[in-house]
Length: 375
Image 1 (spheres, rainbow, N blue to C red):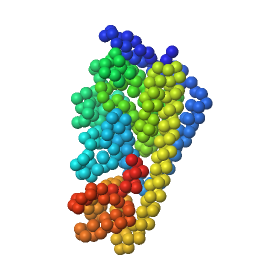
Image 2 (spheres, rainbow, N blue to C red):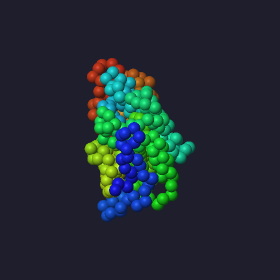
Image 3 (cartoon, rainbow, N blue to C red):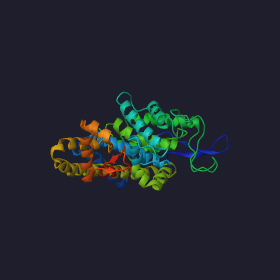
């Protein structure tokens, strides 16, 4: 029998998933593979501390990683906008920006809001609702009760509830299950934090408490919980890249979590493999940024009299990979238009930035090698 609940016929005639009390006793069978993956994931998480000494400014690194997570988590839900689309929109290149770039923007706002609120409030259902409201404000789903748990039945996949791939709990069962989740966040049961994070995400997706935005909120919940639990000193772990890369398996493992006898273990193995992979990739990206910066610093120092301004501009590009003449002037303090254009020309000729508008006026320039490390 599945450990986490079962499909039960409802008074209206359809069948919905009714969760068991969470977490059930003896939820996890600790086989060698699961223990080994937990150990590897813990080691990989520990390696994230190296990023603070590898990158020029860890806050800029986090800024770019949040942007990447926002783009990929939104893409899992069907948006077409990319990280580059978002950066172009932020640099006022809106002519051809996909309409759903606002969903990425909202995800970033929701992430930053959630992380800042953790300094004032414990992770709670209240905070999750506040994050959800920011996520859906003014975009797809804005009419689907942003910031409020659902008061009607929903379903996943299929044109009707009778043909749905999955029918989450009814509203009364949803409320009970959410109460269990909040207790689970704060209980002192001796479960490894990474295991709790994986179970928290899977259980949240099973409850599906919102009419829209459950996937994005649930993926953001992983990072928020790890920061809340003190495993992450900086918000440096985002799993949407791994989930998007293995999208079919992601959904299969979540479905198995609910219905298979060994579903929780199989889900956790998938989740911990993702933690290990993404953490190691983040460290590797940090090393590549260090190498890239050293390479381009040597180039900047070769520019002669304008080298000091070149170094300032290079550092600026790590927070703002798309610039124009006005931003270059602001970053460097150069007052002369000729001096600004000369500096940009040096960066273009050296291959550090690339002109991306194809026009003669109001040109924009992309630090492409850097952006590619995240896109």
